[in-house]
Length: 244
Ligand SMILES: O=C(O)CCC(=O)C(=O)O
Ligand SMILES: [Fe+2]
Image (cartoon, rainbow, N blue to C red; front, side, top):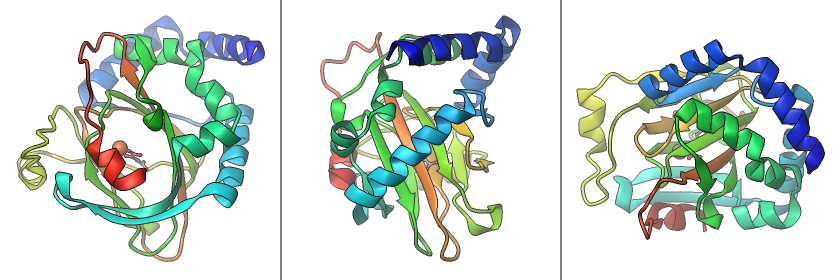
């Protein structure tokens, strides 16, 4: 997708001048979170294509989940989703964005790191919260870099709010989530359709608050490893328990 590359390179040059990039990098490092406004991370038209592709994938390939993940304090995963395999086999634009050197380059400048492919089952995932009480409970990611693309968001009073505790670590034998919640301030972020956010997902404890009412919230999760991660093996049991 040569077109996509030149489109994104030009877009990023205009949308992220050097001084802004520096400020945003500091913000990301401070909060473990950075919000991109509509049309900022990628052109709005391209975002619309991601929404259209995801809607189609959800219609044809989604699976309902209602699980509690024991290894992470029985944190809930109540939602429908399309797996990485489903997206890889039946999508185009999402695959191209995931692989885009321009997008990785921009995120890398914000993170002060080099982004690389993660385990293929975690490249991307579409999640749809669609029922009263649906939620993505407290967790950390297996990998450091996640972009969440907000494909459809309900009004703020319907829940689906992101909550974060940055600069925390996931001890898989003893996650102590409630202790972290009690000991730390929790930052809450609301997003509208078309926004996206960049999360330092391995060291930011986060969740999505339960949905209130019969409303829908859809996101695309794209996830990258660090090219500087020298671990030979990364454990994926939460992902496997919830989504595969
Ligand atoms: O829906 C969100 O905003 C966050 C989703 C999330 O944490 C994840 O997919 O790992
Ligand atoms: Fe997450």
